Amino acid sequence: MITTLLTGLAAGSLIFVVSSGLTLVLGVLRIVNFAHGGLFLIGAYFAYQFQGGAAHNPASFALLVVAAGLATAVIGVLVERFLLRPFYDHSAESMLLATYAVLLTMQGAVQMIWGSSQHTQPRPEGLGGALTLGDTVIPRYDLMLIVVGLLIFGGLQWLIYGTGFGRQVIAVAEDRYMASLLGIDISRIFMATFAVAIFLAGVGGALAAPTLSMTPNLATTFILYSFAVVIIGGFGSISGSLIASLLLGVLASFLGTHAPELADFALYLPMLLILFFRPEGLRGRGAGREVVIA
Amino acid sequence: MRALLGKAVAARRALALAALGVLFVVVYPQLATAGQLSFANTVVIAVVFATSTNLLFGQAGIPSFGQAGFFGAGAYAAALAAHEGLPVILCLLIGILAGALVGVVAAAVAWRSAGLAFSMLTLAFAQSLYTIAIRTDALGGYNGLAGFPFSRVLGIELSDPGYVWYFVAVFAAVIVAGFWQVSRSPFGQILRALRDDPVRTLFLGINVRAYRTLAFVLAAAGAGAAGALSAYVNQVVTPDSLYWTASAVPVMMLVLGGMGHFAGPAIGALLYAVLEHYLSAWTTSYIFFLGILVYLVLALLPDGVVSLPRTVRYWIRRGGGDPPKPDEVELRETEGAAR
Image (cartoon, rainbow over all chains, first blue to last red):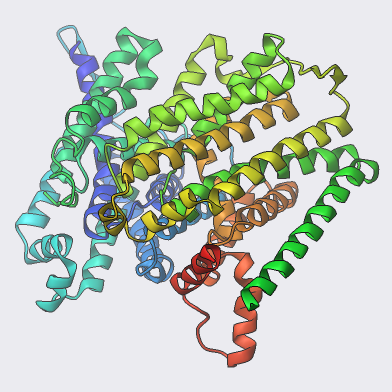
């Protein structure tokens, strides 16, 4: 029971790390960024490459995960600057498709570099086994994921509410025209927000790598979770995406244990319920004001 | 007077094109190998899929990212009907109906949001159909359905590849002609008005929601037709046809060909099919190049390859400078349709 719950929370934390970046970009830049899935994929393969597919001690694991995140963020910034920027004054559909084209290219690039066969990345030393408390078994890696997820949530809250940069981000998300009149450099905010979001995608990929077998198709499955989180949590809401991620993770975990034939539907049941009772999402503000950061 | 003359010329040109098309359809099986014939079937099905999707993107301005859901619904329904031994025509009609019905359900769900959320919801809806397909034994799970021979139309055996081609070509031509009529009708005009300015259209007393839903269901029926045809041609239906990346395919065709012109999606479908065919034969990582090509067309030719002659003419005449802006072009073509 508790094991199922914790496994679910761990999976949810991982989903949160990835989807919070998607939400951030959606809230501030107002882009549905399919390429986010591609950058998640790149983060996972970077982590695999940096670790050489071997287990490391926790300290160097943490360092290499952050390095993978930073390397992914560099690619993300280049993508924003050179590939997405030309589409800012185009229609939403062109933008959507441009990010999809970037996703395809990234998936193809990963396939060319690392091949389409499966790769596995072992868990770091000391985080492989499980803790046993009485009769509950808690995998150590899952505990670490939950802690990291909460740390990232706290970090994002601090970044957005506790810093001057965060206030500028909120201003741009609320009304970018007014913000620009007040002297905020919109394009700098866009780039910084994108960098943070893609750093999170890369870290998410690096943390996910030891929990699954890596293939280039990961990009399309993980973007689905993130989309579901955004719809359930509310557009552009970071706290909403935390709640939605944990909800999805726990639901999938319980269905997987008690009703495996329904587990695949864990994504859609909450989505349908939300749509009927609260179309704006758990923490969204509703029609016309769909973009919020908080 | 000039408009009248232009109309006469256009009518003659359309007639000539139609005659050429008929000639091609009749002669092609005599000239083509079996592989080329099956490729041609693929292209025709893609043309139906892309043309129906353009009713949403190009005309009504509805950014649906879930068209694979309706394509798959049509394919599965036609396959099940064929399994029951129903005649081909009936199977295809059932496929169309299935697409439309699923479209009604999707519309009811997805209209609870708008804009970008709408795109994401349509995607999620189609993806939930994928999940249902892989989890339902009656639909064959991950393997999908196979072994449902389509047999007779009006007593004619239709298993010969040549006959399959004629049948697919004629059926597809009827569907595409239907979408052509829709785009020229007052209904099509209202959809374009809705796309350009929904608020003003609402003030004209037009039931925006009803028109959009009808457009959505028509496009879903068209996608269902394409799916049913693909089941008939390929004799197999897999859940992959429902996976969300399959929904991006018709949209990429629109972008390649151009949404602002009725023939754009058809040209884009041909282009996409050719690209996919040759790129995937050449390298397994063909999506790398496909992504780059789609991106380049989006960035350099926002109106697709149908705008290439116009853009080139513009460059030659003006000796450089920016080509006409997308919206201006759209406006001109809308005026043309109104005349």
